[in-house]
Image (cartoon, rainbow, N blue to C red):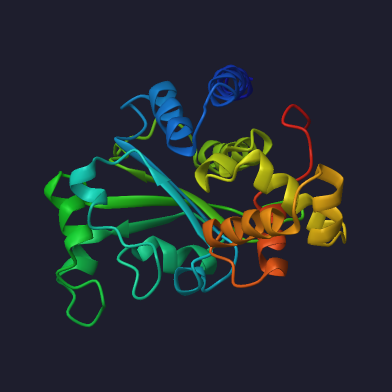
Length: 257
C-alpha cells in the first residue's frame, strides 16, 4: 500500500507539472521561446539545456527537412550547421534510428578518429561548457504526421528528479504543442498571405483561381508561392504543400486539439 500511495503522489505531481508546462507552452510565440519556457518550469534540477529536433525524413539532414531549436548559448550553436551536407550534430543522424531513450557520451564521439565527429567544434563547444552527456528521448508521432522527433537534454543530474516515462510523455506533449500552437509557421516565417496561397494549392486551386479569389494579379500569387517554397526549402509546389501540412502551418485552428 505504501508503494501504491507513493506512486499515486508522484502521478499527481506529474499531472500538476504537465498542466503548468502546457499553460506555459500556450503562451510561447516561437519554438525557441517554448523551449525556454519549458526549461524554466523544469529548472536546473532536471537539466541545464534542452533541444528539440523534428525530421520529416530519415535523411533530413541532407534534404534540409529539419526543424531544430535549443536553449544552448550562441557560443555553442554558432558551430551548428543545419543546412545540408555533413551535419555537425550527431543527434540528427541518431533520431531516426531510435525508439528508446539513449544516453550519449559526447567525449567518446569527440576523441574517436573513426567517426566524422572527431575533434568536432560543435561537440567541443558543448564539452567546454561542462556538458559531457546527452539524454535523447524520442517521440514517435501518433497524430498521423509521421517523421522523426526527439527532445534532447544536456546536463541531466545523475539522480534524475523525474522518471524515464515522464520525459517520454513530455516529448509527446511538447511536439503536440509546437504543432497545435502553429509555432512552425513562425519558425519558417510563413506570412498569412503565403499560408493562404499554400492552402489554396492544397485543395487543388491554381494560382489563377487564387488570384481571382483575392482580386490580385496571378503574378502576385506566384511570387507568394515562390517565397513560401524558398522558406520551406521545397523544390516543388507539391513538396511545399506537403511540408506546410506536415508542420501544421496550413489548415486547422490554433485553439483546437
